[in-house]
Image (tube, rainbow, N blue to C red):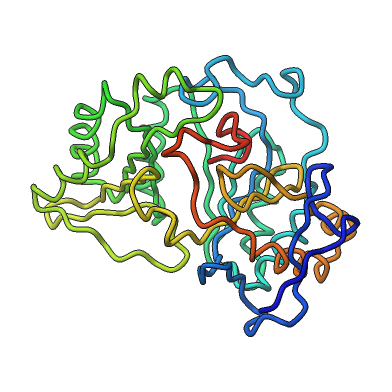
Length: 321
């Protein structure tokens, strides 16, 4: 694929004229999104709102402070979301995860889920959300498991002072439940540096304990997220581990992120995002597809978290992690 720089008038960015490559010869496989490191992007994480009414200490300890603390009024509409998902599906995306902020803030969330599920080519639609009362959540989960065959995953932030106790509790919880409990390494952002350095713990401790006690890693599907999942013959459920600080973590990246205002993030922790809303507002699926193809050569190889560089990510509610 030969690339040439665009003129400033063709740049896609945050009000800045950043020269982007433009495809002058068609990609050999136009039905796919493939970046400059031969990774196929099959997984879209779509933030439907960046507003959150929770105050989790690793993300928003002071609550939601963007936009004067008020929910933005320029979130993507249903029609814009439909164009977005259709464009991504045309390019080989098979999985969409709806994130936030807190997605359930949107009263039209059921309609968003439905249109994603009805889009041809999309095989998996998942949702990240949260509750503030743990006993109620656990009770509802058991009801859900009794009445459906949903593949349920629970995420927990791995913190140094609770890592061992949480692992023991997770093992008990998944013993007889078809649930995957996933530990996520605490990630540094510009808003949480003090807490990060006090609480960050490596996922190696969890992994070593599992491997030493008969757990084995399962094979990852092409549109799966970054978690390594472990299974054990004596357990119904699984334990997962997401290690963004591990070497080669980014080698198998298959994800792109779009914010609730229609900006695409090529990496969760990159320095820049790119505005694609004009294509969504105009229901211009062909223009969207070309813009996505043009962005592929500049998707970064990896993040720079190990250099304490979280890019433009002030907190994870911006695009749902």
